[in-house]
Image 1 (tube, rainbow, N blue to C red):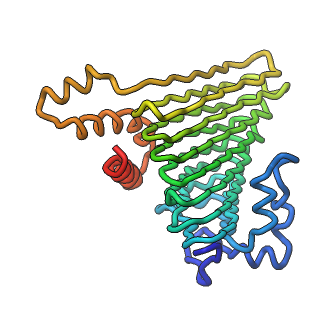
Image 2 (image 1 turned 90 degrees about the horizontal axis):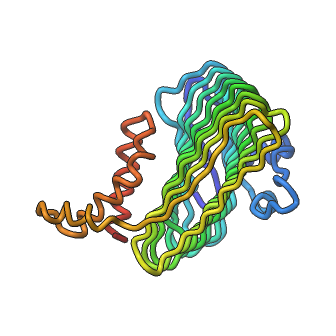
Length: 330
């Protein structure tokens, strides 16, 4: 709460949870605080001001039956936290990162994840800051040999939001999936920027981002896939699809491929559309009022991304947040 971790960490078999303030004090986390590069403004800001957070260590072979939830809640002012996790070889886990609060605020949050050989992790980021908050976030991950990472990002709040995603495949057979939903309303701005490095051969990735824009909201998705010279047999695909619900809303998409290998399968695409009036008429002709009909079409647009998740409880919770957003902004 407000950048200070709970004094009592939960006890979960196969999981060690440590307050980041302790690792900052003894210096053991120091090497992981380095910014991503010279232009890493969020990393530098967070490194300068971070005082707490959590370090989660999941043992080799551990299979967690329930999700681990990491919450960063703010009540106004400035909050700077860091959430770091190491998942051991062959371990399986679902981690939910929740970013929320109330009042005018500036928050920065950096999440770091290292996956051991054969590990499987689903990491969900649910960002629902108030429309008076500036939220600057970064997610960094290294995916080891035959490891699988599914990253799900839902942005459903914030006045000014920047979510950076930096992922690198470090072992053959690594697989990365990004599924993103950006729900933009009012006079807000949300920017999602991804850099994915395929650094070794025989790795795969798919990225699907769905955006819903209403009011005077503005959004950006910048996605770059780098295929290194020795990363032969890479298979990478990226798609960004946007649904505009108002004439004043805007969304800009910039997909990029930078390929230095010659035996790869890579592609990217982007679409922008509005609600199909024939579909709207079809529902209204069967007694569905206009607002409910629009809600059903919006939900269908993003439901495909949510339903890819295996956990039914999480799917229902995310669909409930989608319904809540549409009731407020639809």
